[in-house]
Image 1 (cartoon, one colour):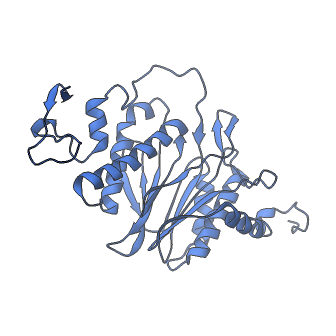
Image 2 (tube, rainbow, N blue to C red):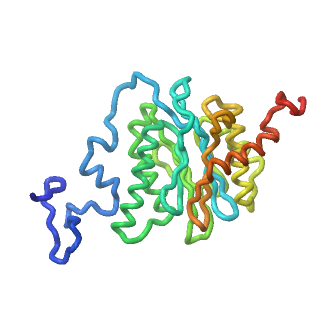
Image 3 (cartoon, rainbow, N blue to C red):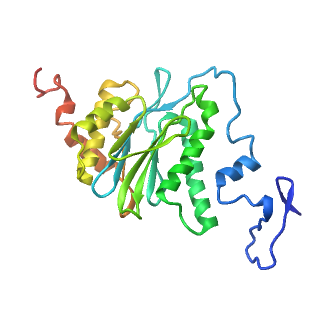
Length: 288
């Protein structure tokens, strides 16, 4: 049976030994998996525009990325909200993009999760087709294109605003990138936050960050900033000692992407909760 793409027949080259088809001319999808989906399945990428949505959509809330001396730390709380209700308590908002980078999501949860999956596939597809991985800046540009493609839905309220960070093997340093709803991409030289509690998290980080901050200090700072955001923002989930729900934290350095275990985060969180995060009205807290 003949194989076609966009109505054009696909033929195999004479030297081809792989069972995969070989593309020629206008039928070549190139190294962009996202562009291939746009060409072959325009009905699902991007989603069709609608006039209104008669229900509440789950939203991911607060995420942070902090550059440190050896790389970068990413973290996110676990709560997802739908209107005034809690839609989920264990949402994973920080995920690896590839071996050397990670992405954190805030905004419309369903679209954000699908965007991350597509982004992961795009990076893998590019590396297989080109035989080489994209630069960290190139990866950020790819993600910016996906955010831009969601603009139609963003104008209807379904905004997805991720954070992207990673270890640049060419510069031997961590880098942090932010985005806006139109696909604008901006590099931050120190730290970045996004989501409903981002202002509170950013203020906490701003008060303690310095250029040579260590990885351990950056991890503690990220956890503290999320606790501070949860204390002020109802949509941000704080530490849940009963259910043992704590933030998701990952370190990206010369060793690659490393997600901290739940036990390690719990141990740090318990220690940090003995500090000012307990509040003035907690047992043993200082009166103010």
